[in-house]
Length: 97
Image (cartoon, rainbow, N blue to C red; front, side, top):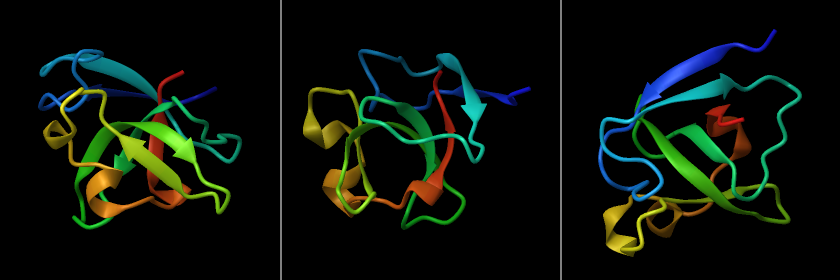
């Protein structure tokens, strides 16, 4: 049985897909999860310990690292891989099924 995790969206980086305050249900990652482009994931911020964020995997690089983006059309509305670069897949904690 897969473990579910409810997460409340904070901020506008995933707008228009999700709005500030929306509650989404994610699946906690296990050994079978393989990150794919377009997956919505809960990921640890690579530079801020203890900070979790919801982002979309834009691309999976040949190295296996993930390029994360927000859905907001304004690139300045999201702190994502444009700011901190691609991240290790080990930072992904949960995903939208």
